[in-house]
Length: 287
Image 1 (tube, rainbow, N blue to C red):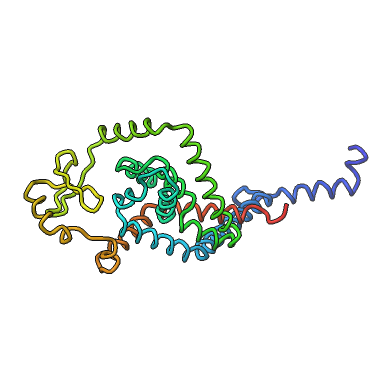
Image 2 (cartoon, rainbow, N blue to C red):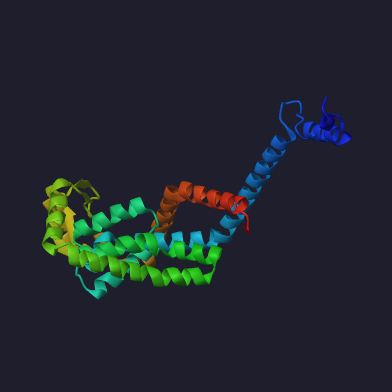
């Protein structure tokens, strides 16, 4: 043995080194146990934080979804198109308002934008609706306010219209209106929209129906008999948004729309809150 191997200091060092690496019955070292324990604590803390985030944002989510459901139930897409048919400031403001009240699901709002454009909305307000429906929605604003503070909510309220203004400016400069009309006509040719007869409630392809203009909306009928009954008493077979607001069936429809939106988005919401909680627990407050 050399001198260093014979000294008490060397012997103590060896013992401490072996002790620090001793294993338990499962073959794990003390260091491994510490790592697993820390991960478990972080996971539990992340779940608790996610629950706290959800509790703080619950009222905002519910309020946003209920407002969105009510507007979707009381205002039809045909009615929205009447306010989005021109490339002017009025149509853009209406489009932003409709988009703000929609859900914040990108896939659903893309389909809604396509439907509005196909039904006659101008491409400028259609783009404004699309951006507002994903970046300026009521529910998202309330959640930002609840979790981050009113300053961030105000920043979103100011930034989203600027984003919309930039986007519609690019669309105006780069997409000729005749090409937009050609795209609309192509959509109408390629798709066979299904409509509902307001008299007998029968559903059929629009091209096979009989159309009538009523209060700036196109109504389709399955037969001349239904069209004749509608013309005799049109108000019996149509319901305005004012009548829906004051009727029980209108609010039932709004509740069903809210339920549908929640059912569509609950998985994304759950994953988002879970990831937010885990990240908040795992990332140190100070670096």
